[in-house]
Structure formats: C-alpha cells, structure tokens
Image 1 (cartoon, helix red, strand yellow):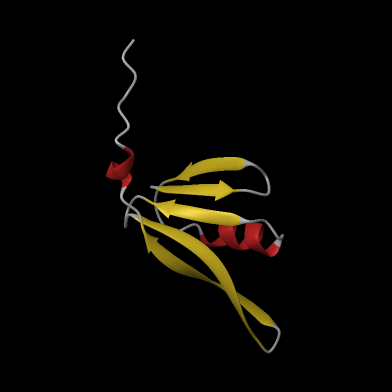
Image 2: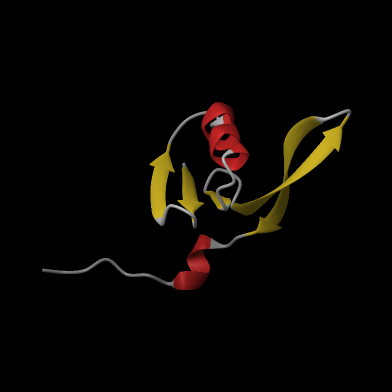
Length: 77
C-alpha cells in the first residue's frame, strides 16, 4: 500500500496496487508538494525532477521507513 501525502491540498490518500505514475505526475506537474510512504518497500519517497531538452521527468529519492517505530496500538472500545 502507498500513502500519498499532498501538502498543497492538505490531503492523504491510500493507494493499493501498482505505483500510481499518472496520478503522481499530474499532482507534481500542477506544482503540488507530494511525498509517498510505501508500505511495500518500507520507504519514504521524495520527488525531484530532471530536465533534458525541456522534458521534465519525475524521479524519487528513497529513505528508509520503519512502520514499527511508531508502536501504535489499536483503540479498544
């Protein structure tokens, strides 16, 4: 699962399945600030762009993420 955090829109969405190329490209090309937490690879992905001959391509830096470090326990009702 991917957790997509869009700071510009103040939104967070969950996405299951393949990497959401088109969605992320649209958000980033619109100027939104986005990061992605991948629970598949336990990484935080931060975008950066490269430009060659006027063509922008989005790439991602990966940082390690340990979901267990939060030690979150479910609420008991």
